[in-house]
Picture 1 (cartoon, rainbow, N blue to C red):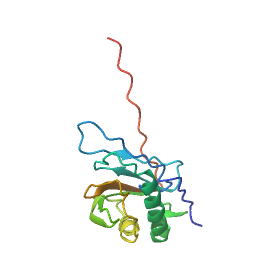
Picture 2: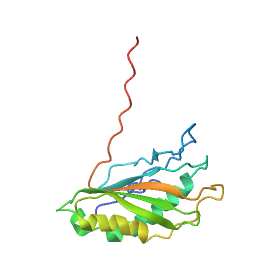
Picture 3: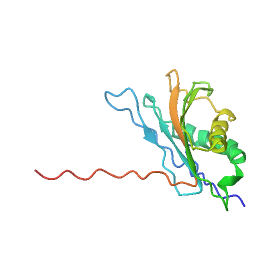
Length: 168
């Protein structure tokens, strides 16, 4: 029996491989934005995606939703059986990539390995086997840089808010 994979989106990569996509607002004085798409629910296979490049104020949320759907559709059949019960193999894969305005993916780098070649290959193949739509017309940059996370039977790391500073 296959474990379920939810897709609330947004990869990244990811609901439930990839959660809801949030596009960063332009930050003053910053050449790079990094905002994670948060998963809606914990599932056996999850992921996340970060936008690493300057978005130029363009809203990528709709594009990321489609990106996640395409990636998930390609990823599902590539996931090794050992991810399912009874083995429930765990692992996390992190891939950095650039998406050209045409939607073509270039300059992929495996930044984090799961420790299992099959899990790594499934994540890599999810991206290389997908045909993505062109970036929004409003975006005039040379590429959109992303970092995609593919999680197998693992919870996404919890981001804890900073504690309020003490009153001095």
